[in-house]
Image 1 (spheres, rainbow, N blue to C red):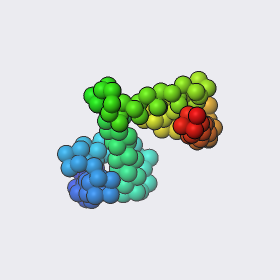
Image 2 (tube, helix red, strand yellow):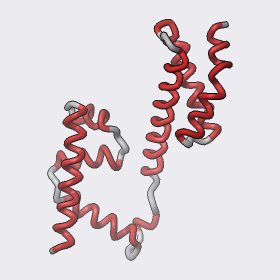
Image 3 (cartoon, rainbow, N blue to C red):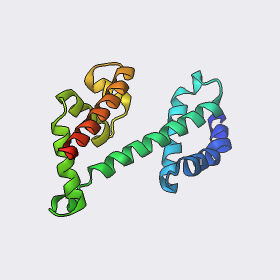
Image 4 (cartoon, rainbow, N blue to C red):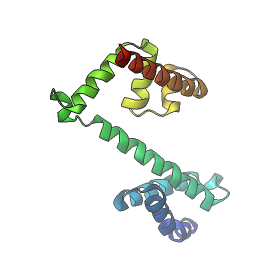
Length: 155
């Protein structure tokens, strides 16, 4: 009964939070909220402030939703990238040349973060390092890629 009351009291607000604050589509917003309530159901014994816990859960779940959606979008192959003469094709060649000039660790870091959509924490796990170092590495490798690109176009 207590869970049902919390559910009825907060569901509409949490759904609207996902929809309007994080732009999650309506059908997905309900799924996000349902998942958060499932997590709450499992952890409710240790939760002191259900409203705060649920709001935090919806915020994190909404961000995760867009991370997953971004990964799916990045995995779709753009057919124009395979056709010589298009801007996408030229960009793909340039990226290959720039990335080819980087050290293998930088290539892997940028691949994880930008092509696979991994967060800093996920990059750290993959590389077996700390979050702080992974974030620093992402930044440094991006700067090196920019320098390689600049050098490539100034030749």
